Image: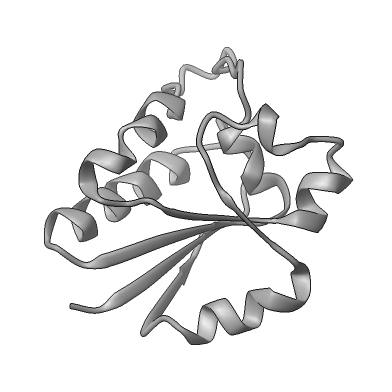
Amino acid sequence: MKKLLFVIKRLPHSGHHVQENLDMILTAAAFDQDVSLLFLDDGLLQLKTQQQADVSGLKDTSAVFQVLDLYNVDKLYVETESLQQRGLSEADLILPVQLLARDQVNALMQQHAIVIAD
């Protein structure tokens, strides 16, 4: 089993890449890979409560994030500084996460065999 880390940095509803990333995440998890997610910068907004897909016709992906636990994807990390810069707290997120200081991000990446950034 390989340890995979998906680094999510893009805004929700900003294109089809979000759905494509979710497809990769769920596929890897379905094949019993050890999957973790790291939300940095605007990517953490994908976990923000009360999202609404914009008029671009893109799907609301927040519901998919809520079923990650069914695929044993339960290691979700959010960079503390990204959260603070956006005036948010853990209570503003739809899932429980582990907060990670910016200076700990590199160590997290080194713990994984494969790092996939969006």
